[in-house]
Length: 109
Length: 122
Image (cartoon, rainbow over all chains, first blue to last red):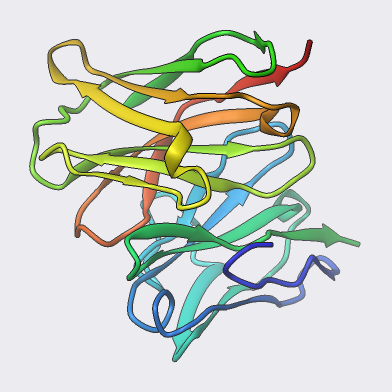
């Protein structure tokens, strides 16, 4: 049982906009930055979004993050086939531990 | 550029102790703000954060595994070692080490090792 709650799956067609939600609590998302990771099949995770809405160098601006209260969202616009992957949200918790979501498998139809 | 690589046994017997080494380059674990974490992912399952060590040798552990985990660093060798005692089959997973930098309470792992699959079986 993951501390952060994500939908297990999401899907969209090429060109569509898809959002993935991440729900937490006041001790994690509510008071600390949210990060998003993309994991392509058979590879290590990659940092996609940090500090709620910042993109590391090289991440397309099709990916965006937002946070409100104890929830966060990852949005992918102009969906592409190569976006098919697992997506994880993560945050620090004030109990001094790291917490992850259970992951969302994105399928591009 | 920053690189990390995990090394250790691929097969561990139940009740044994697992020792994994993360050897890195491109940064120093004595630099302010730097940390190295360990995470794992059982086959087909979600990522799980295990432990984190900071440049000042402060250490954090997953509460559910804290009694079994020890994380240490050797700055001169550019290595971070994770030991996990009393291994069980449910600990079978790909284990990753990763670099983070910045504010103390952030979980932004920006560089990852390739991961190493550890199987626990008799």
